[in-house]
Structure formats: C-alpha cells, structure tokens
Length: 175
Image 1 (cartoon, rainbow, N blue to C red):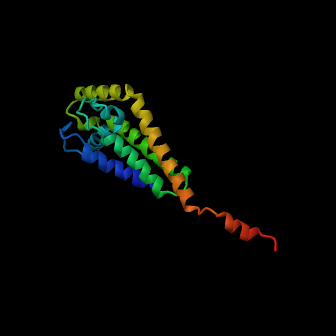
Image 2: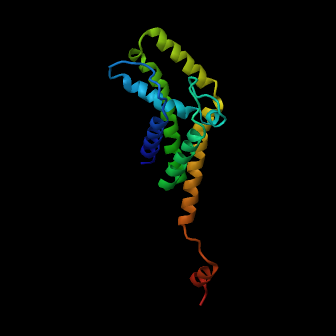
Image 3: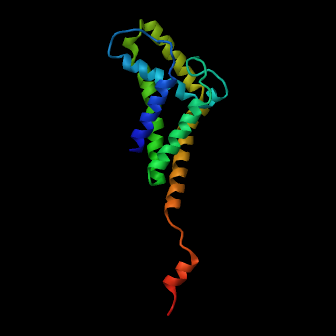
C-alpha cells in the first residue's frame, strides 16, 4: 500500500512537472518510455533544482518542487504505514524503482527516437548528468526513507497511550 501510494504520487507529480518540450516524435507504443523519462527527469535532481541548477539533460530548474515532493512522499508513506521498518522499505523501494525505471527507459526508448545518433547523444548527456550528481541520488534514496521511518515511529509512539503513575500504582498496589 505504501509503495503504491509513493510510486503513484511521484509519477503523477513528475508528469505535472515534466518538461513541456517533446523529446522525440514517433507513433509507436514505445513512447511510454519517453513519457517516463519526461516524468522522472525533473525529480532526479532535487538538491540541484533547489539550488537553481538545471535538471538532468540541461532543462530549466523546477525550483524547490522536487525536493518538497520527495519529502512529502516520505512523510505520507510514514503516516500511512504502521511500522518504521515497513515505511522505510516502501519508501526506499519507491525511490529505487523511479531511478531504475528512468535508467531503463533511456535504453528501451531507442526505437522511439528519430535516429540512433540522436538517441545516443541524449543517452550520453542524461547518463553523464545523472552520474555527476551523487548528492542528488543519495538524497533521493536516503532522505525520504529516513523521514518515512521517523514519521512512522512517531505515529507509533503517539498511538501507544502512556501509562500514568496513578494507573501503575492502582494496578500493582498490594492490598
């Protein structure tokens, strides 16, 4: 449930943030990979975007939105799931899936590009930009996961009603 929520929210958010310029024109079913690239590209550089740097591929920065989206996703999954372990696993799986789908879409989108040279150029540019941003990748994998686990742990602690000292005395009083 947490994985589905996180993955769905991040995909929808990425689609709303996606780059407005078409990357390639084709009429094949492989365009879905181009849509995934467009949706996830603005999400893969949250720290860089917050600092005003261009996103992967050199497109304009969406600002603080990717950073806030990753943190909001971690928080929502932490609220939804009952244990910190489950929340952390679901959030980490969401982050890792988005990264892997983006990388896979780069390779699987080859037939949707106009020619092989254009595809190789974009593949090289995107790959180089992704590898040159280790802080962004570390943030995507660690920050939402940690926030999700902490949120879930705090919710779990709030749910457990603290026992007052008077109740303890009543329960264990020697009559």
